[in-house]
Amino acid sequence: MDLLNTLVDKGLRRELPTREEALAVLATSDDELLDVVAAAGKVRRQWFGRRVKLNYLVNLKSGLCPEDCSYCSQRLGSTAGILKYTWLKPDEASQAAAAGVAGGAKRVCLVASGRGPTDRDVDRVSQTIEAIKEQNEDVEICACLGLLSAGQADKLRTAGADAYNHNLNTSEGTYGEITTTHTYADRVDTVQQAQAAGLSACSGLIAGMGEKDDDLVDVVFALRDLDPDSVPVNFLIPFEGTPLAKEWNLTPQRCLRILAMVRFVCPDVEVRIAGGREVHLRTMQPLALHLANSIFLGDYLTSEGQAGKTDLEMIADAGFEVEGTDTVTLPEHRADAIAAAGCGSHGEGGGGCGPCGSAEPEPVAAAVSEETPEPSDARTDLVAVRRRGAGTDLAPNA
Image (cartoon, rainbow, N blue to C red):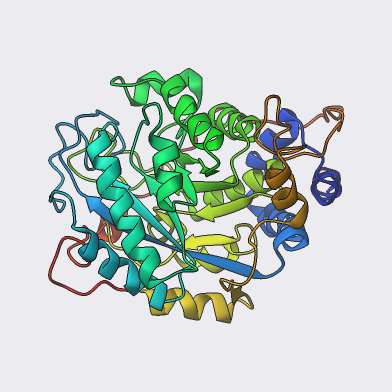
């Protein structure tokens, strides 16, 4: 179809699609799905080959968060039966991280519930980073601690952190319907603080919260303008005991279309399949590897994931290979641009995922659906609370 040919050509040139084209990808039919995956797969392979980067989550502090994010099992007022514990000690966190590294993880993501860290918390996490790096010198460390205050990103960078994650989650227009205890602007500010400190920015979204196609495109275009190096795409895990427990709006086909749209909008950025892939993609997970070049290995923060061994078998069976620590994840032009703080980096007016001076292409006519998709059947049997790994005496599944 002409739309896909156009998007492939643009993706190979790092030329940005229009909003109309992005919306048209979400509006494609199931009959066209394999064509969409094949087209976006060409763009993915152009910039990332057949490599899959593995990431591993360590939940440093679980539950009892004062924020009211509707999607979160750790939120204020949540009755989800998740693990609740205070800060892991640096050696405990290092031991937890070692399991992921042994399974092939190139990046360890250190996460803590809460609005944002105190300076004492940053010192504690800094000690944890140092402990992990002492045992695994080449591993990347990404911190995810909530909203940052002045100077905290610099402290994390000095301690050895490589990246900072703070997701936008949803569009600015609908953000107030999901969270009221902080603002969309607060999140943007934290990502920009991380970038200013020299940390690689990681910021993504959550799909499946009842949003419309326009909302998905809005948040992905906002991410493109913010220009993170990696974009995690989460699919809502509807935990019982949270306000969004009844939101089962995703099918495997819709998840694939969302991933394809993200790849077309940010062709040369690390796109990561994050939380909820097992719940919503299910047996279609291998197809998603043709769109995303990065996944989480094993369990998530409060829910169980697919066994690490199964993840590795899936990657191999699909014809992909695990990315090694000796390989730079980002394409050379992005890595060089970031280092030089030039075109495509995080400087003022950074050009998102596109090349310097690229003109906005003319929109194409396409049939666009602005309706929220019909909910799929609830698969509550696939939502399993994490009972192993960090914060427990049981071994993780990595």
